[in-house]
Image (spheres, rainbow, N blue to C red):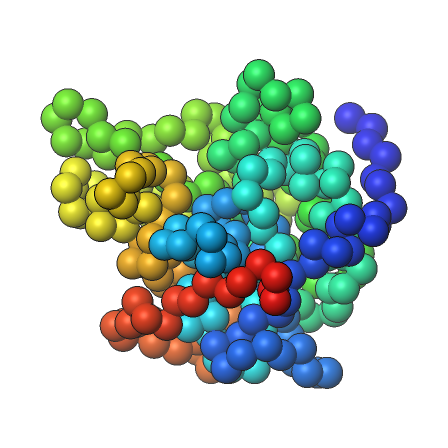
Length: 264
């Protein structure tokens, strides 16, 4: 596949999020930054979406204070549309040697009826993911592939059911081919939903009086998934023990906050 990258557009630059750390906003010279490229399951949410929570919002609670998180994940994006909108270019304009780039897509790549987002698992999906890998490496940063977190779906027997088709397998194969670290969040989250069961998992998703959302998380769900991500970053030696904290500690839901879109 031959792809022409867009230059960073004004719109993309305008969408670059604040850099969050557990201690507040920071991007001090000399400190590493962990960037997230992804979709709504990881994205920063704002006051009008509460209690919906992306796992990227909770990740800083498990990282040392001077390891900042720049969460560029955006609702509704696929590996393709994220690139086509100039959002990968926006990251690559900022990322520095030693930084990390976590890449989680598939939820919207699966939208077969939408040509602006759809990718085919074993061809275009892998091709677009390579743009993230190559771009990060060219900047001296380390890319990390993250299989898509699972939705809440159970069969009649109460077994957690995978929902992402061939996309996780395609990402696993690409990680092996490219020699890139893979966080298998799909397998880990599926196992967690199986352990919790049909009713208990409702406490981790955005189930409210008016909505029954089996894709997006509330604070407990985002915290649980962020904990999995942090543990895997440590297990795969992407991060050192000194880079992580609170892996087994209770994280209060009150730590999650939803800023106003006007001030974000």
